[in-house]
Amino acid sequence: MTKNPSVLKWIEEQKNLVQPDEVVWIDGSEEQLEALRAEACRTGEIIKLNQEKLPGCYLHRTAINDVARVEHRTFICTETEEEAGPTNNWMPPADAYKMLYDIARGSYKGRTMYIIPYSMGPVGSPFAKYGIEVTDSIYVVLNMAIMTRIGKSVLDALGDSNDWVRGLHCKCDIDEEKRYICHFPQDNTIISVNSGYGGNVLLGKKCFALRIASYLGRKEGWMAEHMLILGIENPKGEVKYIAAAFPSACGKTNLAMLIPPEVYKKKGYKVWCVGDDIAWMRIGEDGRLWAVNPENGFFGVAPGTNMKSNPNALISTQKDTIFTNVVHNLDDNTVWWEGLDNNPPKNALNWKGEKWDGSDGTKGAHPNSRFTAPAKNCPCISPEFDSGKGVPIDAIVFGGRRAKTAPLVYQSRDWSHGVFVGSIMASETTAAATGAVGVVRRDPMAMLPFCGYHMADYWAHWLEMGEKLGDKAPKIFNVNWFRLDDNGKFIWPGFGENLRVLEWIINRCEGKADAVETPIGYVPKAEDINLEGLDFSIDTLKGILEVDNDLWVQETAEIEEFYKKFGDKVPAALKEQLEMLKSRLK
Ligand code: OXD
Ligand code: MN
Image (spheres, rainbow, N blue to C red):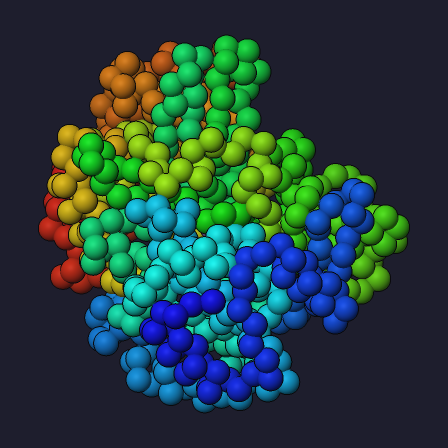
């Protein structure tokens, strides 16, 4: 399929290492994929679901010990530990290669090697980066075929270039003790062994599009971020784009596919999803920041997805989707998960493949069960989704789950302050019944598990990007949909109503809305958030826009502690931001 010497040489090396019985190049054709589906059905790797109700859909169950990303077994293997920084696990590259090669050696005996050429970003786009993943799993091939652009066209676009990311995946024995997800950013290489779970083995996603790409972005002057991208179209047909980062369990996929409230729909507002997880951003010829979603599908969490919480996501899963670790309804050969509806099937198998009817109080679907759905299935997918030139970003939004500390929304004072706001991002666990505040987990820019180099160098890169962007830089905001009342209940209704907050954000970007200056940044005047058609009082709104000085004094002490972890490397501009915040709080 290719004459590219660097590709052929590397494939030969991998063959000699893992010793497959057979080698298959994935050309991206539907015939080949269909033959692989049929084969995986024969071996039981996947189960064909009811083709009338769920055309093109399949179910897969992972091993019971292999159901999520394994951060403690994920390594950044740079020459020095310093380059990986205090928030990554590190191994010297030579040691890591030796260990991984020992595990991988001969592991494809009796198996087939599938070679998947794939593109992150539309093939041929200036944003696109190419990779080749070698795997012994048909499940991986079929998932990569949904999540990325694959096949011969990628190799054609790559030509003879040596600029591509090498990815070796070996299922081996799915041995937890020998499970490693290792990144070699200096060699453009990823090696994943002893797992078959998506986040560990779909190497285009977190491994390439975030860990390796963040490293490349710093080197090459662009950004790889853990962000959704959405477009908001106003009644005049103008579309503004927002990129937003949230730690997990903050409703990122819901926001990416938001359904406008009725009053907005009637006026002609529309929301377009460009991406739900990852944004690659570059400075365009016009000096603005442009973004693409490098992925081609959604790898979403199934539980909690329903026609109310996220109809667009649910509709996306109704054809050509692979479900992983959900409930198998044997009556009609469909799937179910907690939070889909209130009717758990009576005749079913749980995610482990055991007889299950929910009567014993156990969950049927794994809490991290997933759907892999083509982005094109999404009813609100942006017309710009496939555009290689990307979309111009007006606002960057950070967020987290804070019971009291953060107001519903605030705007940073400028780019440097915005980078500070991103660097202190945090989510807290709350005991909902009592409203008690739980543990705060800092997750800068939601990149904690995904930054491929030293987090403080990453902040410095953000600051540099801001300098290059100058007055064309997107404005930076922070949102918190999760303020709790004294009974531990969420105050803000969230979901589609979040558009009201996004509207204020867009208005601020266009200089159309006023704001109140507080020590932490600019907060809306309550009357500038549109509450039309919503049963929500302006006084309650005022309450969740309040900034509690004492809580923020406490917060600055915690930030100071957090920054200590990064030692001298914390950029001076961020230390200065912290000092300025402290003095504004006095
Ligand atoms: C994801 C994650 O699966 O961020 O997208 O964990
Ligand atoms: Mn994610």
